[in-house]
Image (cartoon, rainbow, N blue to C red):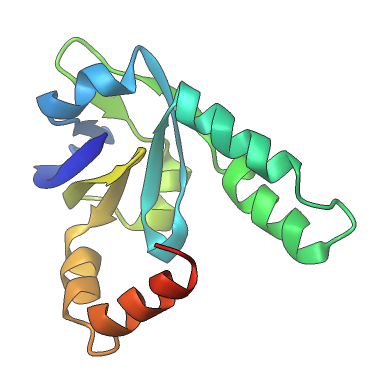
Length: 143
């Protein structure tokens, strides 16, 4: 399980240090893709395969389902850690998430998210981010 929040910088070559706490859980190879809310998702292969299986069940006849599936697969890249515990984030993903310098790497249960630091700080300050309202909606989903 991935938990916690860490700050790291993307270097000039597009490399990002993955916190040591997360490295073993990621494994040798993992998937980096566009995430929701203008962040990047990093999935261990096992979790990516589970996510992929769920996306495969979406009806191909649904325009929204096709768009949702394309969103995740078209931007996906298989990555690995270098000897210093860094990953090379492809340019298209860095551009999408605006991760050119300071980032937050957060653990979100089965995946990591990589956020531009300004976007993460803004997300946490948003007035409409009412955890009470979100909790009520989650209760309706049985959580």
